[in-house]
Image (cartoon, rainbow, N blue to C red):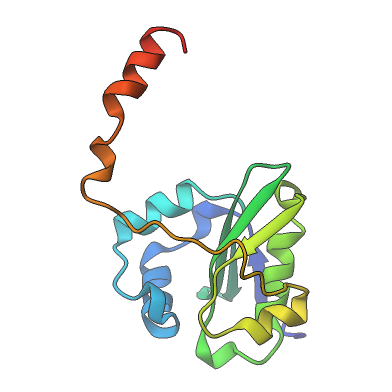
Length: 155
């Protein structure tokens, strides 16, 4: 990857949300149809957020969350199909991993079909920690009164 027009950025303000939405729709079956508003919220609540550009065109993206000491999770790694196979995906993930807030004990990620790609970077399959809780419509009301009561009692 020695194209001088391609550059990586960690500046969220540079990200054109419409280009990001289009990139997801083209290259990420798991992220098709995400709204501009939801993308904005996800980016605002993530660090680091890394984008890859060919001049003014967004061609890659990844974001992560971290507690800064123990655990971090990488999300939404995507490279435009025309740029895949050139080492950009590996460099993108490595850029995320070298960010200061990603210097933690364990970094997690979820992938459906790209296990071999992530193994090249050093990730290992870990079947013992995979669980998911899907958004439950009634879950948000569960326990709210108890939490508010504990907060009012100083607990």
